[in-house]
Length: 171
Image (cartoon, rainbow, N blue to C red; front, side, top):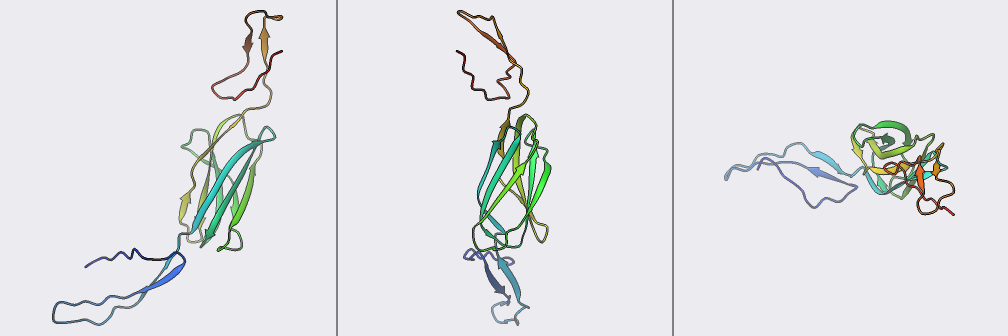
């Protein structure tokens, strides 16, 4: 056997391995011992993004455990492919308990945005959260209603229904 997979490891435990060969009649001495820590660095249990105060995106996330975690980079994209860093939140202080985090992206431009977390370990290993879409749609919209007064039909100009969610009441 040239490789071995231990399928019974427990997260957070250390394991010690050594190798010995046997060819049917001769047994070698043991190799040096290798120590491996079985730890999934971060277990993300929740990640949400909501629009607040028109142009702020409020992020909340929670981890159930953190081992070797440096922290979280917040990344934003307009196309879901190319992401830019918006900030960094360092790891919490207790890696074995639930950690809750929050971050606000201020001055978010109108449009659809994709937000994700880039988690980085102390050893430089990187993993990504799921991408969460948000739509920021506020600001200086100018509406034009015609004709005024209207009887059977009313035309509304100035709303892009492809990029905005609109609730409109006409009385």
